[in-house]
Length: 256
Image (cartoon, rainbow, N blue to C red; front, side, top):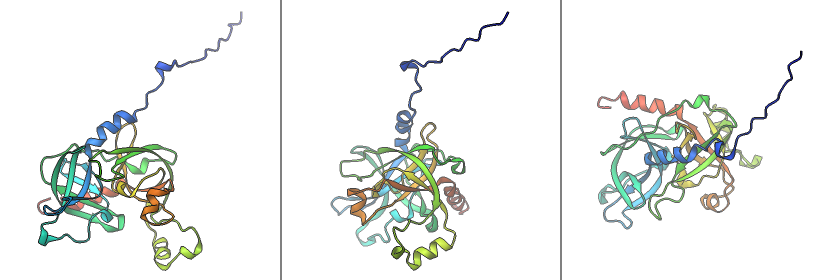
């Protein structure tokens, strides 16, 4: 006697749907996201915002973009590089010094004065895949209203050379052609809107919070103002695997 075949439809009730992990992950991540600034006691405002950074390792090391840092500090007027942590206007200013940098990767490692801060974990960026959904947290508008980190969703759309694409042949100047010929490092191209203040923001997995990249530039059609007024929705991030040589560089120093 044949046994009847019964097909069961698996229905997930609304209350049983998988929850989005990002809200909980972003809540943890934002405690490790900091502002990079210069501080001058005789200036108003005393802190001048430069970009975003994030804490790793023992809670005293901060990663950000090399292009975020100022070229020179006004030593005569006691201007210094600082990292600002906290939420809203409840902030702590940490003296910071550069302990390792890789200008070609647009990365720099800072060491900050106590207290230590919650640290993020570096993930394996080589395992990131095109189509993966990720997120980044930073300060797109700086400290105008206080330190309120903003989190943005992103999709990895491509791995591409670290060179902003030209819109037409007239923009292919000698420096851009040279950069493309010299096998520039590969970076993540993201379907996401970032702003100049997001430079140095951690790009991380939505479920674990592991950092797989560092936001470093956006594609704009025009100047800095155009990035805010008319964003392209194309953002680039440096893979986090390139942070590890900075850590090795720091630890190889006599007192690192």
